[in-house]
Length: 97
Image 1 (tube, rainbow, N blue to C red):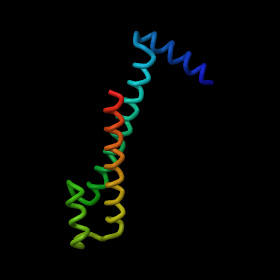
Image 2: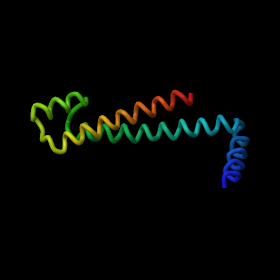
Image 3: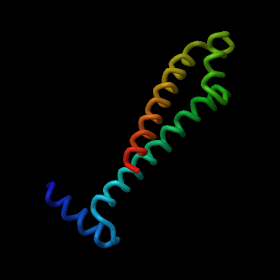
Image 4: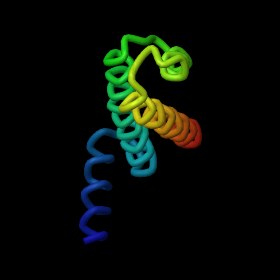
């Protein structure tokens, strides 16, 4: 299976006139960029649902009980996790670039 993948990658990279390493690196960057796009959409959707522009604003609304704690706290935690994931993706892209 791995030999078959290497053969395909070699053929495709040659077809487009780049090294297999460059092809794989660019494919990884493209994958991470697309993953980042999906996470940003998810993050923006949560913020839009709560009619806020920043996570700090969402946290203040929850702490001041301007919006229901449930599910807002869970959404806030989800947003923080999404931000961590986005930071990791950015770091991975930097390493690959």
